[in-house]
Image (cartoon, rainbow, N blue to C red; front, top):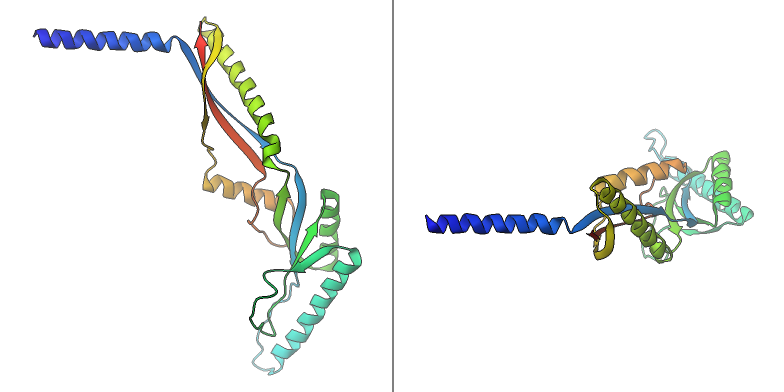
Length: 224
């Protein structure tokens, strides 16, 4: 019986100590995002031609091949005329033989958003198949200090609100820890899809990231 009373007393003391210690600090978790500025774009372009074998025409393959090569020459001639920087998609030095009906895809580099809109309009006008394959963004590290400053400011504001509602004052920071990003694979996929489609194109690519810097931190303050 004495052991049970001793155990109960010890438990009550520990619980009261935990409650007391919890009243000594305020802990908040905040997160923020910064959209990175795109600094260049890459589009993949090709003819919209599709080969369908005609059993009644034994020359259908060679005829399509001639039409395809002519269309691809038209594409490259236009890209050169407009002054775009472009290259063959994939590894042009790879040792393999293309079938006569295989299409060639070209990667076009676009330098800014104004040129991007001009490029899209030209592709649509000329009936050239295209989609955005990559976006290069400004350096993430250049925005790291900015997002942490925003997070600390947001954390302080939230802690002060909690303190005000509970009749306390926020003191010094006791501890800061960084939380993991909460972006899931599904949410990233949905965001990439929506972002890609918003730029327009005759098809969609998911080779680029969302261009978003996300950080979240857990901050513990003294409560007075």
